[in-house]
Length: 234
Ligand SMILES: C[S@@+](CC[C@H](N)C(=O)[O-])C[C@H]1O[C@@H](n2cnc3c(N)ncnc32)[C@H](O)[C@@H]1O
View (tube, rainbow, N blue to C red):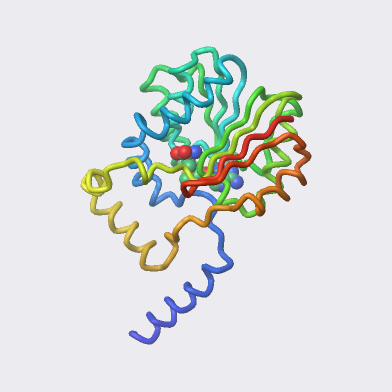
C-alpha cells in the first residue's frame, strides 16, 4: 500500500512537468474567490483606476476574469464602460455573476464561460482588452494574443498584467481563517501533489515573440516587482 502511494506521488510529480492546468480547478475556486474579496480595495481598485485613467467609455473585454472583481471595480470608477468577462471556469463565472448582480451592475457586465484562445466575437469588436493573472497559465500564449489582436478595434489598447498580485496585498491569516475545512483540505491536497506551484512569471524577452507573432507593432513591456505589464496598441 505504502509503495503504491509513493509510486502515485512519483508519477504525479513527473506528470506535473508537462501538465499545465489553465483554469482554476473547481474545488479551489471558492478559496481563490475569498482571497480576491480581501484585495478589492487594494489590488483591484488600483488596476481599475489605471484602466479608467485612459479608458472611460466603450466596450471592454476582460480575459480570464475569474470571480469578476476587476470588472465591478472598473464600472464603479467609470459607468460608461460595458464589460464582457470570460473565463474557462464555470464555477468562477457563476461567482462573478453573483458579484456583479450584488453590485447592481449586471446590465454593465456580461460574463460567460469561454476559452481566450478561441473567442466567439467578431473582428474589431472591442475598444479595449484587459487580462490580469492569466498569462502564466496559458498553454499557448500566442494563440490568445492573436485572438486579442483579432477582436480589438484599430487604435484600441490591450493590457496584460501577470500575475494578479493579490497575495502581496491580502492579510493571509485573515484569508486562511475564512476558509472552510473542505477548502483547506483541497488546498492541502493540491500542495501535496505539487500542483500549487509558485507562479513562473514570463520575462520581457520571453513575451516579445508572442506579442510580435500576434501582429502587435506598438507595445511596451514593463517588468519588476515580480510582475510583468504588457501594454499593446493595434
Ligand atoms: C489567477 S486567475 C485571475 C482571475 C482574475 N483576472 C483576477 O485578477 O482575479 C486566472 C484566471 O484565468 C482563467 N483562465 C486560464 N486560462 C484561460 C483561458 N485559456 N481562457 C479563459 N480563461 C482562462 C482561469 O480560470 C482563472 O480564473
